[in-house]
Length: 476
Image 1 (cartoon, one colour):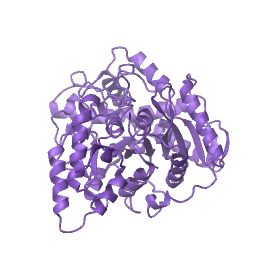
Image 2 (cartoon, helix red, strand yellow; image 1 turned 90 degrees about the vertical axis):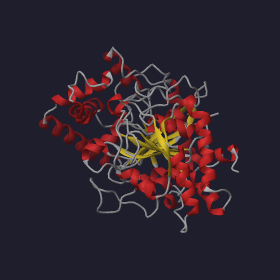
Image 3 (cartoon, rainbow, N blue to C red; image 1 turned 45 degrees about the vertical axis):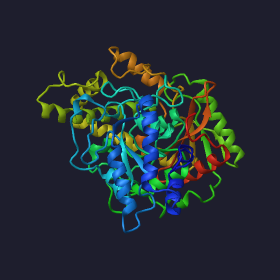
Image 4 (cartoon, rainbow, N blue to C red; image 1 turned 60 degrees about the vertical axis):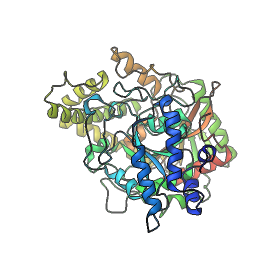
């Protein structure tokens, strides 16, 4: 029998090694995950659609299979409720799609299925993944395992809560403006947003916000992130966007020594908002750590106009929100005023409806020009270090997507954010590393961003940081 403490001590690759040695069966591994979920999920509301019986049946079938399954087969896993899992519901965090059942799995979910991961369920997300906290009206708030009065971040907040609570070692996440890095920061996890074009995403551009959204995982360890990146890396010739060069294995390449890097420190808010003392301290501590590891560290003035880029990205996102809402409207025969969505969603959909083709293309062009600027910048600096968020983890209720005062919501959104989204516009890889904790004991991540296609560089640096300043694997 696999004990709870033994289960909590393992990352996904430890689990795989234990299965290979025969220390426990896949059924026992999934029973341990389900027991942890039943113990912790009522408190943190990370999993909104449990599929425990289905996962356990799959694990038992893998144990009885005549042929040896893949290395990660049988590892308990969770899917964010923005992606389809065949036969299961996909609510998108919204009352509008509460009765929707997927006829086929999303392309990235199919990759995880092909690897033999057991799907324990779907994770909580804000409505359509549109905000920086996970408090949807339809599903209720996800609560941070470090302190249940605080947000898990968003939009992969349920995924991060599940991993931080010890339910699974890794969970699927997605990032269209910071939605991997922000919950990783809030919940004390490692979160890498891969380069645009490197990995499996939606099968058409509308499914990934015109190239701004990518998918991967949140994890306790860097090596798990590298291993799961191998599962979703696209082969040459099967991609919607230009694909960067990639190693044969990110897991193997991340173990190589990290080269000496030129690191630029961005320690002021790019749009003039106040930076929380803990967020600034986290960046300065990371700078000192990088310097002690032999990297060249200097201050960095970011060349991009974040204000203008924020407007352009917002315009593109609103178009995609309108597209998503209009599908439901057509199906149910409703107009925008009648459709059961939150106030901010309705506002964004209304804006998106008014965006013309010329404005949409102008926004796309603006992001492409920013991408070219950053390609030149990274000829002089390898990695940019900045906060993930401008404030430490917010209390639940502070950032209310359904607020009657949308001006205040937008103001708070701006105060809280500012750093992550530009990397989605430029397509650069970017990661949150849990290097700091506040006086209250809440984790605070630090963001490291590299040139497009230098995902391996970030993983090598992350491994170096993890070894030099290891972080707790589970929220106490």
